Amino acid sequence: METIFKNGNILTMEEQNPVAEALAVQFGRIYKVGDTEEIEKLTGSATKVIDLKGKTLLPGLIDTHNHFCLYALLTDQADCRPAAGCVRGEDVIEALRAKAATTPRGKWIMGWGYAPYLLDDKKNLTRNDLDRATTDHPICLVHVSVHGAVVNTPALKELGFTKETPDPPGGEILKDSNGDPNGILSESAFMAPLFFDTPSIYAKMMAEYDREARGEMMIRCAAHYHSLGLVGAHDPFADALTLKAYQDAADSGRFKFHLSAYILNHWADAFMAAGIAPGFGSEWVKIGAVKIFLDGGMSSRTAAVFEPFAGGGGGTGILNYDQDGINREVKKFDGAGYQVSVHAQGDRALEMLLNAFEQTMVKGNPLRHHIVHAGNLTPSQIDQVKELGLYITSQANFFSLLGDGFIEAYGPDRSQDLYRFGTFLKRGIKLALSSDCPVGDPNPLVGVRDAVCRKTGNQQDLGASESITAEEAFALYTREAAYFSFEEMERGTLKKGKIADFVVLEKDPLGVPPEEIPSCRVKMTVVNGSIVHDEQ
Image (cartoon, rainbow, N blue to C red):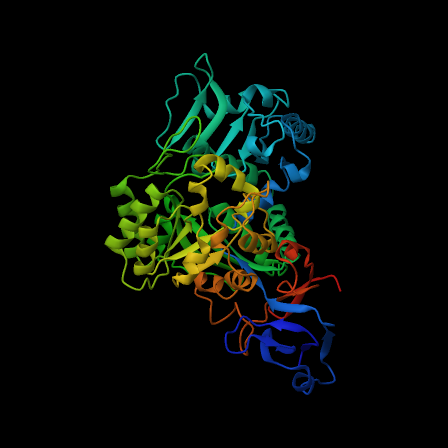
């Protein structure tokens, strides 16, 4: 036997045998799970024996909606989150100024994690503020929701946005009192130049790194995720350069991370023409679903809703497709046999999406199409999700990060009906939890805590009746998450024959107060039987 882990509190996530004391690993797979005495009998002269000393071992965690490559790039840019010390508008400007000081003149600078409602002074930054950071570089300060941004004057010039530039479909170029762009861009006005245009800002910034540096960037990011107990993620936004970076990292032999790369529908025709289907790739990097953006975000008030948002401004959000358009996109990819993953937040967008799926998909959902976020599902829409057999990947960690913004946008009463995880589970709807990193912290223990506590950053309750248990939340990061990539027979639980992916926590996360779950420090992460993170 290669390796034995004994004397632990092992949470298998298997319904028949949920708890064990030890497990044995051979050839990268789980050979046996049981009590310490029976597993010790498998010890040979070359066996590595690891005494867990009562620590908790559970399946490796999987993030089913994580912008892995974007996060890897942003960690090399200006961190403008309150957690990084940016608690006022001036702190954000200073962080951008510091990044400018180390960036070659004329190169793009990107800041991330910013939102006015997260700042103590609630400062709504504009191009004039960003110009004080630098006018020698174009700046793109990404809103924490990644559904908008603020840019400076050089960026507006490079983008070609002037007083005469009309708002693009599904987006807005905000103007000042003189009718000039004030630097604030919403939805497609920001998303198109950042991601969709050729070349995009993202592609330009990635191209500034050579091939080896891009691969190393992916490897560093995977190592950070290992330290959080993550063994895999689904990146919902992989273009050709991103796929190449993943491939180069995997070819190095040092990228021990299960990456499912989703292809944006705008770029998917080439894959269809070549006959490349979901699952194509290696053990480390595989093609996943086709991703479609239908509407915006809730804290940014761009989700497509029936009832206007609360407070000043109101509005009912934006849509990237009309009903015929989303019908066409879903039908196109479903008909070609591709799994479809659609970003839909507001009830108006969800209504359109459910109608599109109802007209198209085969009963039982064999392709495992899923909705991303689904924060504003109404009771009748939940009935429809259940009837269609659709899956949902959502984000509990939004509660502590964006929850106060949700309450502000939806009002104190209406916001209590968002993200109805408890109802989803009671109805038997297939659900997984994820982070939407870099929107949220990639730490899954934060997501588990928030799924149980449902508290905002200001400790307001957000739908407390929809709370789930810590055990249920961990299942949504392990056993249930594996279904989204058709890998439930390979990973997600600890069972004989499955891949040996697991994490060891210092404390039992089911035995501490839920608000303390993030303190259950990751001591070890194992991928394919190999220890990739070790704090023992």
